[in-house]
Image (cartoon, rainbow, N blue to C red; front, side, top):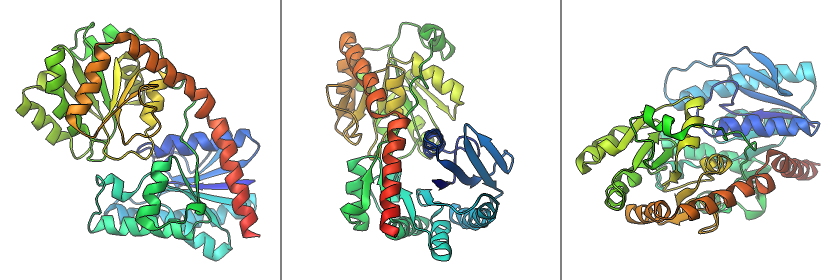
Length: 387
């Protein structure tokens, strides 16, 4: 098949969050299966065209002024124009596959003008990003585009049943229109041999002190504030634990302020945005990963922790973890999060068992080659429906 993949981010253009590795890595896996894959995305600091790891990158310049809606309007126009031009050079596409709400206006124009149905992967919803609340203003229009994309798509792919249920409830999406295909990771992507003690020392942490890592957007959806509130209860159990908050977002200042109010600021490090190399180093140096999300469509950081053979404490919003088998699941409450962290810090053997169990699932459930085959099957279903 000749596949057009539309996304506002990728690993080799503008990279924003978790959609970027998903788009690039699933495209590479599809290319390994013999398909011709073109990623249509924003240009950033790259050339307008590249072929990387078997995947064609078709990049367009997009003016970054104005709010996110104005930017995405311009991006959709640019991606549509690029799609027209690329078809004239490479030939007609068989499948069009978009990711999240950002390229929806381009997807619907392609469907209308070329009678070419599209698939849509929904990685999250605006409702979920707002902490399980409906927003106002721009949020309402983003939600509308999510609904429009789901309505117009031939098939909607989600990464978990929890995300499927969310779409059914919010947008009244028919269950038979959705397919559940998990996110993935390349085995060994995060695993590195590091001197954990030396890494900790660089952040002013004693080399033998436990380090708990939060990695994600500092937003209400990801719940960094819940982890901050849990810290005093953890320090009562063990006073030398240190918490690393890696990520940027609107809640960072509030979390730093709350840490000072609770008197735990000396046990916290708020790093803001970090490079991929620094993230990799910290994941391998930490003693456990904490994912305190209020809403979590998938939780790729869990896969990253498992790949580095690290144990995970998460909230019940993270549905890929099997509680007490390959991680611990807390209620969405600081007290429960603290209880889980304390349990593991007091039981090093259990930490190792959970980490090993999680790591063993990567190759059998979350490899990109398995996920690419499942995605290919959904493409074929969509093509059969369009005949």
